[in-house]
Length: 188
Image (tube, rainbow, N blue to C red):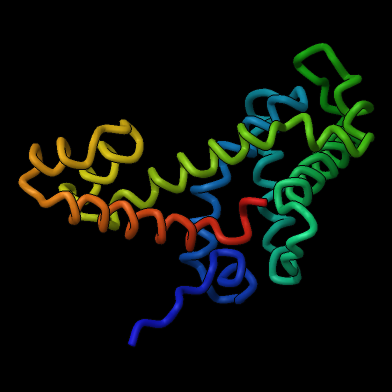
């Protein structure tokens, strides 16, 4: 009997899940770097801020309870924004973009929406797929990628890879099921 895999957020709540933290860092570092640059920090200051955010997340995520009425992205954005404010206040870091009003604008609740939902979903899905690729055989991954991402007909993909059409459909289902497990609670 197969057990249902525990979501990444649930694994992060367990104090000794180093693999989950490693995976979370791989998944979210590029996004946090993008957000930090959006807030006006560059170079070493940006890298240090991302580390500050992860340090705070190590403390906060074990207590985090997913609420389907709220957005994980909004909560994470708020953490990033507050870490940025604290770092700027503590170190008097100059903002590289020349637009310090970004932080004052970020005070309004609608700024979390500025980080577009579609962009966030697309980024997270793409990054999760990159990390998941190693979990599948190359032929399985190619069948999935050609059929789902490149939107080629299942019959064409099956013929090219020496599979049945049904095998292509099953591959799609298997990879998408794994993707849903991976992103459970992370996509709002």
